[in-house]
Image 1 (spheres, rainbow, N blue to C red):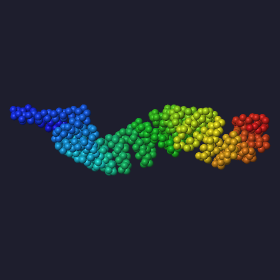
Image 2 (image 1 turned 30 degrees about the vertical axis):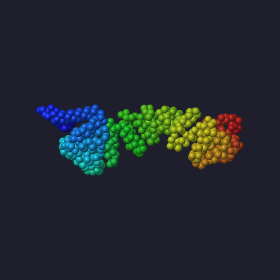
Image 3 (image 1 turned 90 degrees about the horizontal axis):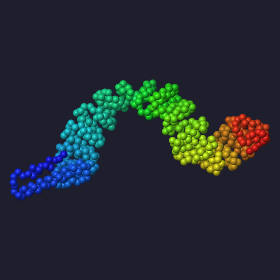
Image 4 (image 1 turned 120 degrees about the horizontal axis):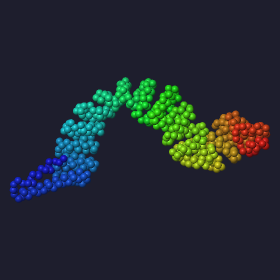
Length: 571
């Protein structure tokens, strides 16, 4: 837009009659100046159109300096400053333009925008009020006025601006929704709800409006009104899974569990509910599935719906596994966990749960294979190194066991229990390969941090007795172990064997007989120890009887056959 001042003197360039020489020269000079000024202004406009904003601003400022009364230059300079994010300078120039001409809608609108950018919201609002007086039918002006009131937290005035606009165009969804939010900001639940009620009369089948209205009724504790709206939504849009979830919650909160489940089932059948939402709901059944048969039936029925619709079958199978585990059926639980990792390898919790189940059942073969595979996908998971290490050690694959345990312990963070397990297993493995200095150091370190670690107390003391070293220390540790768990046949056998090594045969006999009474009578190692103790007590016939018994129980020591053949003790 160009101001008329630019062209006000052009007619004088062509004089109509001959004048005296001096006035003619004066007019000619004036016209030359005007022409130079106009060229300067048009150059500024050209640079602005080319987005050479810095250059155009310099030229506009030259225009202002040459002719301070040329309003358009101030306006254009303000626009350029706004683009350059020089808001303070833009404000100064826009204010100058408005001071010259307060009825120019362009000048006034730019001034209002600059004030808003400068966070002068009250002044910006005044400018938009003036704009509305000039352009009462331009909807944009009302929205801008409401924005200034919102930013200055004058929510009632913002609502008033929206009301003025609705008087002109009627009830509008976007405007009413904004008014609803503002009333909520004012904690005016009554008017917030009334706004939605008026809107729903205009848009009776708008699902979004009905849904928000129902939520407003819930917020106002108008449960009956909310329920009627929920039902209306369900009738208008039966495939709306979200409304079925909402109704399920509504029925549940009101104690109607049968209808709650019916709506939940409809939600699971809807394709509009995200799979992760369904899986989260299904997973919540894990903790309550054993409560009664009804809950159990519901849980599996919902899971079947997910499987039938191929909704993340890996996760669904994992939840099946959780269900069966919660119900105590480990066999089925393992089956579904395995089905889960067949289709997706990235659910770490499934690997972990499956590995724990295998070690619970002492399935070291499966534990070794699964943990090795799990490490391909989770190469920094310490627990999987631990499982692979102990399963390898079980099969006397000590090289892989040590490599896995030594690597895995480096990945243990903020888990003292697991770190201790690594140390204990490493110590056991070092003992197995004859690295006794390392094993003893680790056992001592574990006991320093946890003097009552029963397994380490037993293993360490037993290994010392096998090596016939520091038997006093071994006796003390084994005694502590039995004090902590007094009816464990394995620990009693260890103590008996240490007493045997110390030559305390009578006490050894008492403790080995305790072990036999506490379940160790089926252990070939313990029974053979019993025979050795009896022999030292000159009960040779009874000793021979126990050695022969070992043959029927399993594998004995390397000296067993020699003991039986020569009826003598060999160690």
